[in-house]
Length: 144
Image 1 (cartoon, rainbow, N blue to C red):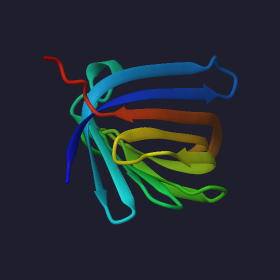
Image 2 (cartoon, helix red, strand yellow):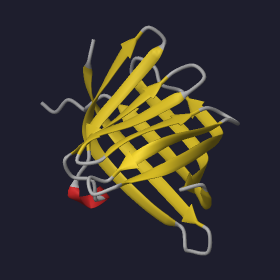
Image 3 (tube, rainbow, N blue to C red):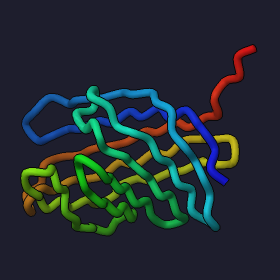
């Protein structure tokens, strides 16, 4: 069963030789469970630079799959200690993206929870730096 949730995302990007950049958003989204996998989905906005894109995290026992559809198309598979390569299609061209999860932790349950992923990233087989996501999920507050 799909439920409405509030999703808070803090994404941090540390590219080699540059200052760390952090983007934080709070948005409405959905959460559903299919077997042992929890799916979190939300629409990107102008603030993230990915307007017209739906982001979905499929959180399994041993991996997390981040899929983006719409204006930007991508699929990144996070498995601790294993490098996975995929395409990141920006609409005007695609890049090869390699990700290797360093740390993954999920406390997602029926009432929400937290997902944390820290990973190294390569673009076109060149190491770029370290990124992370901290995603907090909660049921919406009821206002009377």
